Length: 188
Image 1 (tube, rainbow, N blue to C red):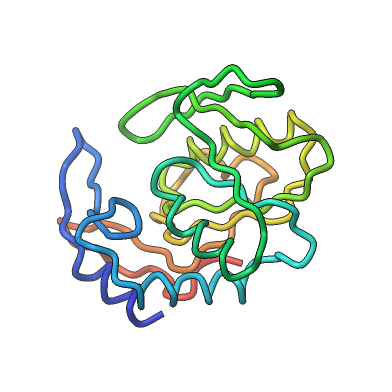
Image 2 (image 1 turned 45 degrees about the vertical axis):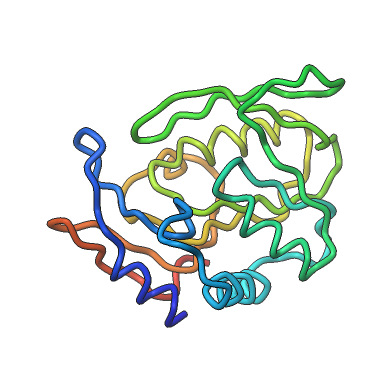
């Protein structure tokens, strides 16, 4: 995880209200995402996640898409993208997403009762997006086999008081305008 670790240590920090936000290729698409970093992350996910019996990879738009696409290509597991736009298709399920700096609706298509899913996202910070997704998938009746976030921003989040468990590849915090590595191996 040398490239991920170093790229986080080099990440610029911006303020969104009182929320300190690191800008990173995995979470923001800038600076540009080098293929070596993406490959390192996907290999680590394959080693860490329970994927043997997974039917579908489920990821929220937009920043989970590149990671999940690479994982789908390496594992031949189909990919479902949770969208921020309603399409009105049969079986579409709406969910509320609340992050540290915004609220919105998202929509799940192509996930059904009994589907065995891996939920994958770029960053676990406040837990609002992930909790909304996991609650909606549970409501659908999907079997959540595993949940992975590449980066966890350490500190309390909305999943702390739930039974959901999220594996992470690296845990960080932002202190005085700098990313600090809390656990270079993450959770799980």
